[in-house]
Amino acid sequence: MSTSNRPIILLPALVVAQFAGTSLWFAGNAILPDIQVAWSLPEGALGWVTSAVQLGFITGTLLSAIFTLADRVSAPRLFFAASVMGALMNIGPLLTEGLWPLLAFRFLTGVALAGIYPVGMKLAASWYREGLGSALGWLVGALVLGTASPHLVRALGDGLLEWQAVLGIVSALALSGGALVLMVVGEGTMTSRSSAGFNPRALGALARVPRFRAAALGYFGHMWELYAFWAFVPAILASYAARQHVELPVSWAAFAVIASGALGCIIGGRVALGVGSARVAAMQVLASGALALTAPLWSMLPTPLFLLVLLVWGVFVVGDSPQFSTLNALTAPRELVGSGLTIVTSIGFGVTIASIELISQLARNFDILWLLPVMAVGPVVSLIAMRTLVADDPSRARSSDRAASRASD
Image 1 (spheres, rainbow, N blue to C red):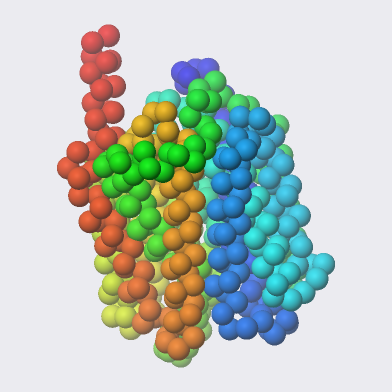
Image 2: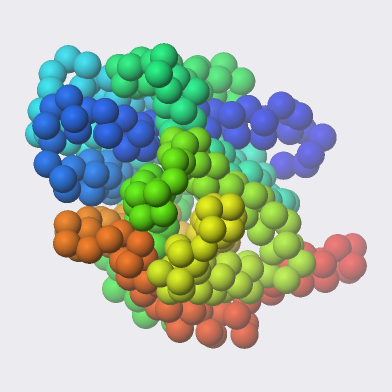
């Protein structure tokens, strides 16, 4: 669709709505220190709470794809319905207490997020042909800010807001995002219905495509690191403060570190227009992997330098995410794009559960700061898998085709 036919408010509305909806993601993590004391939750509760959301998201994406909800329900209405469900499940812990009810409500919140994050991407794709990579950079940036926002709410209300109020504010934010999409963002005209459904036989066909296999493995390595890093940022800060005998505003710092990733997404999207998605993804994976691998060394730095390095890690750890989405879409066979993205997303979030649970279990016996190199396993896998894509970048080939077409016109 041409820019002249696209409402100027469209992208800002999508960005705000994506930010508001995805604020549900880490709401449980932000309040966990409070309810861990109030409810006498076990030490490993952080990993379980995070994994419950991830497992819910995997379940939701698969159910949505199997029943082709995106084809049966308009995307704005689906986004709104998911926002309502997520807001209600998010405040579920206000009604009861205990670890198992908490995990159940976080699981159902993850199911609802499957109707927010991917559907927001689908809405962007239905409106944008030219500049989709840049638009996705903004949307993933909004996801990053949304993920960080519960830590901001908790920081702003430190000493003023109880954990119950934090949940209420996040739920209200999610409802407002759903309403914004329903009232402002319509469904675009470029949705490809033929590739939206899930094909259970697609896995074998996709695995036989070398470039798709490389892009998928690169994405899996990225996901191994990303959500483990996000989940344990407060624990990393608390461990450093205890080791160095300093006071840190953990909620403020956690918000800043996670939110800094929005810069990586937006700037990376712009750079990819010139050098290609594979190169941008590889550079960011290399940087974040190096920081993970050397974490025991830089965790001994003075506080200002430690926080600076952690902020830089926050930029790189997620900045490659829009580029991996682009590579997965470009390397999948045209008739299997929908199934390919569904399969890759589901497996990728399954990988996050494995890394979160592994580090969570190890953290019972070891300082979290000494476990951060475990996160570097993912970037190493990504870099090995992506060698062929860096040499023959499908996003640059697509850009060259468009340039040649414009020249011939």
